[in-house]
Image (cartoon, rainbow, N blue to C red; front, side):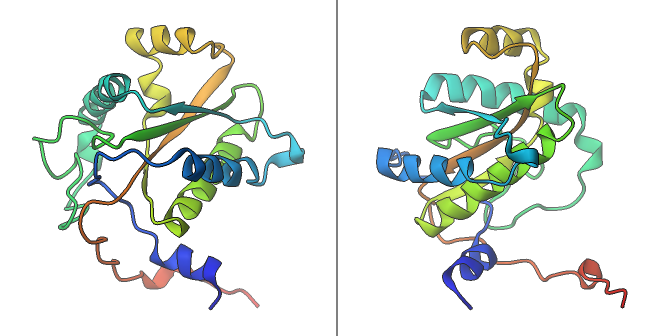
Length: 194
């Protein structure tokens, strides 16, 4: 197996981070990998907003957690024994798990493939982060977060127009402790029609 395949197979969602900030060089490489994600028609429509201010990250992480609890019934079972999620532990107050860096990805609402473009961009960043020894996790509910009064106020301050939809958040930081164990793969993943 080559290094790319190994990074994909070994990457895990990380929810425990050291408070040490990732370096600017590492961040730039992760953003570069995101910018090279495939986009429909080569439009490069997604926008990445990088957050490294602890107060803003904490505020947004708390808003995201509140939204999660409205939809909590859809989540059943333990997400991770080694690194509990907000689905597992009510004491976790910040849905961004106090990660030192959060990248929020937006895409144009009117463009029919914005969600797909933004999603593969986040995946590229997560694989790049793992290859650099940086933990990551995709955090959903971004669109709902920025539909709140507080969320609307924040994206206005960021100069993100109403014509953009928040796709998701990629949280980043150096992992605290060991990587979580891989869950066994399900058998239904591949169906070949020949």
